[in-house]
Length: 210
Image (cartoon, rainbow, N blue to C red; front, side):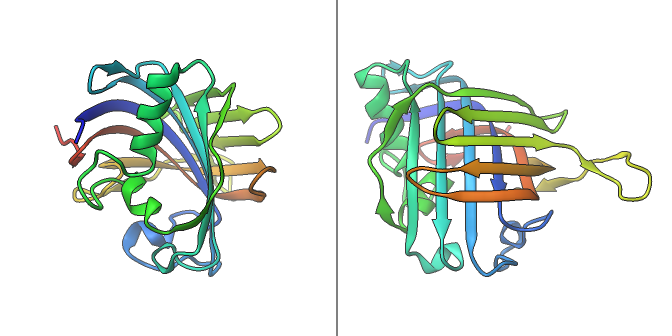
């Protein structure tokens, strides 16, 4: 197994209401789970391959709870990545070079039945975890945005965090409002639903804790 480790920032938008039951071991509140994911690797390596500065994304659709499987997915990889970097990123994203079920990539990979061919595309991604703001644009495929949740009473920003000390994705996540329009090859439309922004520190063995 080739050891890998990275630090990065993510924005995820899914079909659940704010809070997302799945974060607490529950079931998706719409019955199904649709999600759009974007991430930038601020610093990272897969073996001797440097992954710093590269961006990735994905669209997921599960007809029921994630653990029931039958999922559909497409992975997007930064077109700037060379061949070694592309293979390293795809290995990580599909659970390769990773302890069983140690990361969300590895867990999700076991639930996907239809995996579309990966696309190497320009990825425009900006994310401010503390500010609860982000935007993912993949021309012809994805447009996702995350913004702070606003109070229905006075319009003020509402801040909420999730702490998962034993999670397989993050330790802390900021909760936000997300909207996504994803078209091909997987279609997802989400409006003002659950979004999370998190600083990730992962390696071959799972979440790296401070």
